[in-house]
Length: 172
Image 1 (cartoon, rainbow, N blue to C red):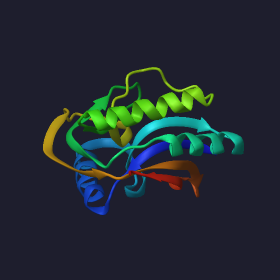
Image 2 (cartoon, rainbow, N blue to C red):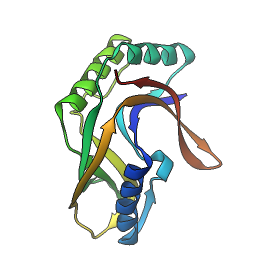
Image 3 (cartoon, rainbow, N blue to C red):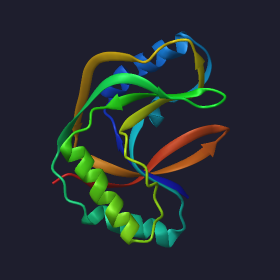
Image 4 (cartoon, rainbow, N blue to C red):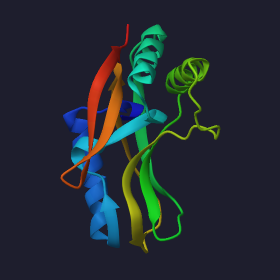
């Protein structure tokens, strides 16, 4: 299974994210835009995992203790790419979020996973291969309280990318 650990959002937050996605889509020549059910904040990307690795991820998640904490979404930006940019909404860095991501990453590395070494940049992808003349913009801040993290499976079903939660760890 192709796996990652993420924060998923409630209906109200997803609705606000979709408004931003749709605004970007309406001002773009082309792009591959995220489906509503696929809008999430990745904490750790794991890639292809066998059943033993999947069990190790669950065990690592179980060792992480965290209290509910707020996240704030504040701007729309992009990572420049050849053939079209990756557009995202940025999640304001805060200590509880960065601490959770750091501790999770440490546990996963200790369990034998090879994770990206670049600095964590919390964001929610709105679209890939986007061609537009629009410049990044600030948005009225919005967000929610994170009270769980989820292990997500990524798969193509009928040609569409689908993310499904297969395990969760609640805040305490």
